[in-house]
Length: 202
Length: 202
Image (spheres, rainbow over the protein chains, first blue to last red):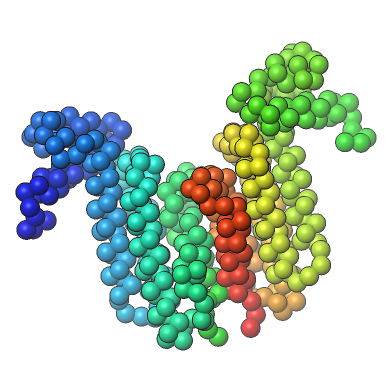
């Protein structure tokens, strides 16, 4: 937030106020007028920075996913074997999802709206996760920890097989049917056990 | 359909007519009056056999899933290694899903309604698939093809990791974003490669 130009600083201030309102009263129920009021500015002034509520949501989603992407990259750059770090990034992604959708139920419709209206932002994040996993797979192959396989293909398979623990609709469905976040987390670890055994060099 | 009591025969006839209408004009647009007309009977008579359109859908879903379950059991009881048969059952389940949701788009809302209104029927089918996979895993472990692992847990992990290729909402999403059924089928095989490698005895 430091050394930001005035335009970006105002955009960030609007996004902050909007995000707080989305968390408090929900995305659908928040109007641009509410956001403007929280920023002590006119709705017309908000519209100078964002053409719509949806555009504010896009900016919030973008920065949230940037933060999570940075956290995943930090884990990937940490210590330990490539498999351990791959496992830790997947577990972190799952934990962040659970926090977002369940600890903060109000955020759910905001994310739902982002998934339908701003797929490009979500897609960019998915590409970043895939790149992190591909990098870890290459590292593990180079170190002799994993077999020689196509890292791009395997990263995609990991992403597809771990969908239950990352896709908000599936997560909401499982938790709605009475599974606890802890049970699901344990099941994700079992899936990772299986997949990491599938690429391990014997 | 042979040697059926008159009550069951009439229920089957109503279900047949309803299924044909659901395929032709869609579940939402079909009324009990349409179904009665197609059976040359009064709506009141249809209601003697089924309390609602939703109950007719439940019966159709039940017999469709029974048929698919029987097909999967036949594949599981066939020749070849346990891994080959496990792979073949998963591929068959995926193909049947694709047929149901895409070759016959009209069936989509029927299945959607079944998933929200008759979860018990779906859950029974999932339990049957899990039992088939658990049986194959036990066989493969006994034959020394797979490592000694918890077959119940691994069957659940397979089910969870293969969700993308069985869950109608996810399939619809992928195909809606331009992936072809063939690409998705190839990706399912890659996922099965990884998971079977993960349980293989070296």
